[in-house]
Amino acid sequence: MISLVRTGSWLLILIVHFFFFTENVKAQLQEISFRHLSTVDGLSNFTVLSIAQDQQGFMWFGTMDGLNRFDGKQIRTYRYSNRDSYSLGNNLVHSLLCTSDSGLWVGTGKGLYYYDYHHDDFHPVPVLKNNDDFNEDLEIKSMIYDDGFIWIGTSLGLFKYDLSNEHVVPYLSEQETIIAETVEALHKSEDGNIWIGGKQGLIVFQGGKLKRVDNDTNLKYSDASNVISINSDKRGNIWFGTLDLETGLIIYNPKNDEFKELNARDGYLAHNKVNCLYSFEDGKIWVGTTWGLSIIDQSDFTTQTLLYDRQNPKSISHNSISPLFAEGLQ
Image (cartoon, rainbow, N blue to C red):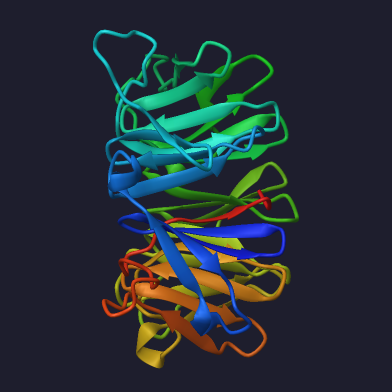
């Protein structure tokens, strides 16, 4: 599901197991209320995995069973059809990316697809392996745009798509072995660096080179491997969450190479599995976890948690939240 929180010109969207919108935001965060949009309203599946907004204002939602386009009133669903060679190739939509040229890229459980707005259909984008064979079963986990290129995180490592010549190739370098495994998360920070997260931990692409961010041996609960979510704040810190239920949320300061750990055991998080992150101008970091939404004030690290309340029909309808999206800020 998804919940939306509107403040001024932005709209925050939280995806949980159903789809829902906030009616308003009061002065205090605990007064946030939500209205719901679910399969009853036309959503193809309860579990939403990805979200994007295109240049025309349409909201796109990738689910476990199809791609949904929402115009503010109605939902249209796109699914695979063996009778239509221009249909979406797979119904499991892991990732979505809208580019400034009105492009919509759809990452599925079996390959990457480009949506043609003019013909209202989908075209497969060949993703090459080292032997140059087309790998149609490649899972596309994450995507980000970077100055004429699209970085693509997959089940077989990192790929780079050159929009100028429409070529997708594995990202190769003398350090290629550090990104040979699944890439779950990608993020571009304000300084232009590309942050890569997956089983191999946290990696940064900086100055044309890859560098592994070494795990800090002084972390209280665990190491920093199996990264599944990444974001950055206005101070230049990198926030990332992992699959490890002991680890929680880790903040990395690239300037002094220091780590800070925020853990559910210490009261900072609703749960240690951090599915998604979003940083706002007001210094608040929104953290979607497996068991609730935590809102962290970066100035003093005070935390507020929002949970499902069966007695309150305007609360979030499920505690498992992923991902987060802010309309108008992408």
